[in-house]
Length: 105
Image (cartoon, rainbow, N blue to C red; front, side, top):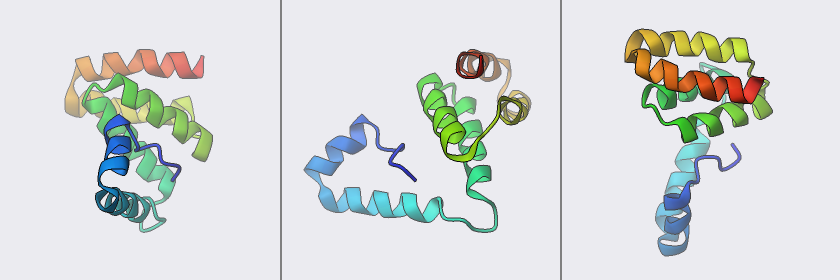
């Protein structure tokens, strides 16, 4: 991918433990390879996971990168959020809606 997973903590690891950083980077590459499901589908799964945790900042990053890399649409994200509503509840769903509206409107 494009290093989106590199948050502040991972960037510190890069400086402090290059070996660990390299392992994490290799894992990221393996996970995002095309396989039985497409990279776009994997990104939609990542969006669902982050949304289900109520991680608004992470959700914004995931949606923006998915939109840029794969052309993910508002309709696709809303379908994902319906699954989040069913599995994680109204709070996770509701907090995700504002992110979607901010990005797509």
